[in-house]
Length: 204
Image (cartoon, rainbow, N blue to C red; front, side, top):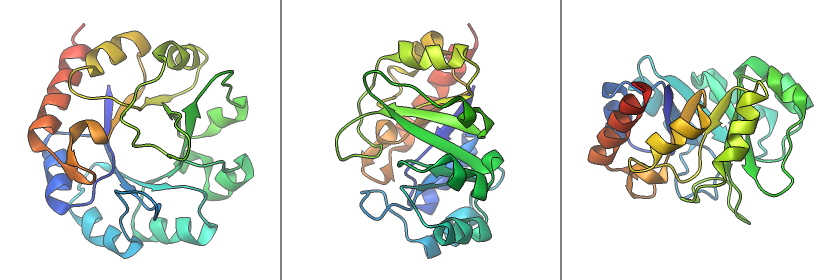
């Protein structure tokens, strides 16, 4: 089970994530987010990311913004808005995590299977992630069974991640607000508890 810690803004939190063995570290380059980091901050944050894959998270960026993040050393680009497949293909589908916010009558174009992964998050009007709320995990399970590589997000925390893993069996779990003291400031104890819970769920 892969783990992504997202919404990181401080070097000490990135270092802690790496020490716990996370697979992906996510940095939000959406200016309206409470966890926003300026593009020029990526260089410093990436320096302490070591072997974890570095994910730059955008909402409907320009190609130039994406290219800058890649030039700084991002491994993957997470697209969290209504970006087109053509835009993702310009970046390179193998480098794209495409996020979808789950709501009623939800479907995904099969062509998105070409992407590195699909991230499923909770839908909330006006918010692109960071809702702190879960959604119906049976929806995610359906897409796992349909052959999509799924990152499960949305309201995960140390208390519910085991149940989520058992029900969905995703490729990865993604957490942000569930391991925080405040937006962008991670709680190192919660980070530890989350990783322990994921490891325990993998034993079953």
